[in-house]
Image 1 (cartoon, one colour):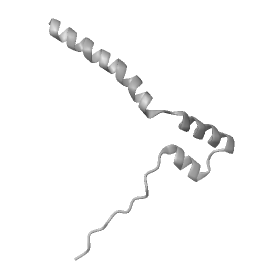
Image 2 (image 1 turned 120 degrees about the horizontal axis):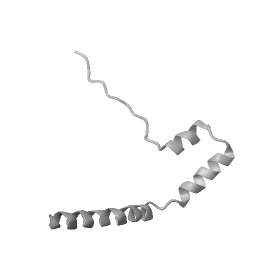
Image 3 (image 1 turned 180 degrees about the vertical axis):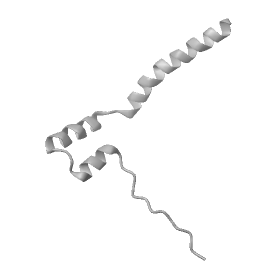
Length: 67
């Protein structure tokens, strides 16, 4: 009878891009947030997170083998 409805979604944006598109920030705030975003290094952040995780896994494995 009726055709299937197709949902249309907009392109996904991160919160900073949504704020910039809505022009909800002052120019100073936008400049500050954009420079902060540009200074981030996702690879280095991932390595910093992985180091303690690896240490915890080694400690847990050592503790498990002792039991």
